[in-house]
Length: 398
Image 1 (cartoon, one colour):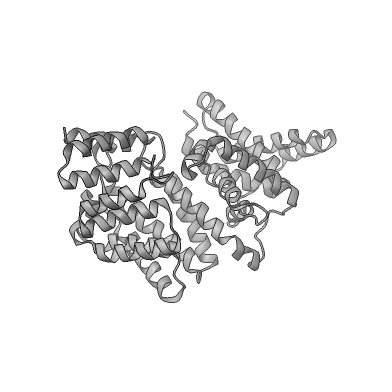
Image 2: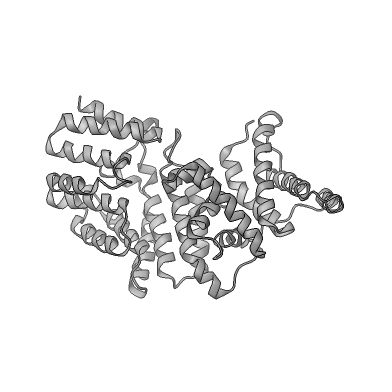
């Protein structure tokens, strides 16, 4: 029996929350939990997964945390506590408190994001680097410095006061969105989806929404996740092949999730100031409500992307807006807009830029040019399902 990565990823935040709640000192506890996870990855394939894997990890992490203190008296006292006390239960708000701790205002925005992705999302440093489009060494340094900063502030492991809670919401939403995106389209590996990540992101987004039901952007985040994840059953075909949105069997979409997402975003837009997440959810709702790809209201999507670009401009917003505009004004207009935008540092080397160019060239009838761009996109992506899809598109045009 192997140490399933999905199980370790699921248990990591629970174990960290339990150990921090018992002992405090986030930095030492996080290091100890990482060593416990490593021990599990090494031992469980040989010994089998324990009957209570969470308790096993908590015990190992707690013992390692005691060892890290380098204080003989404290070490003996804590080791006895670990030996005889039952593992603490994970309370309902523990993971939310851990999430908010990682988004402490003493940390910079980038540090909040990277630390939370590591501690709560369970992503590796390499996965975080790909999600944030940063060098892996930079991400590692941010995590280390963030843990030290948490220690220096002496912050207690508990839910913050209402005013402080509100101040951390933006970073929390950004983190959950990144976790969701890594799960929905894995940045590397053989699988297109990491369902455990999307489920965890949705679960935590629901917690936030329950805490702040009147916050429009939190509602927008939850709606966006639901509307996006509703399409997951139709995103892959036989053998795990990727199926693009326009070719998906919409009967396989989760109608209940779409209805819930549409209801949430509709209510949020009616009562709250418009924000970027609400606009993205509204775009997803337009796609979700179209019974067929040809029924999509692209004019409305173009208008929504215009608002989104004004509120929260970015390279992926630009790229998606170009695709939408091409559906209204034609592929040549899309290619002209892509030529104007593709010189930026992110889009110039991003695989999606080449994939969009390939799609637009294919629509113009330039099969050779499209084939070349599909192959370029395949070389640039680290996701093997995307590679296979892009290579198949290129082969079809040979």
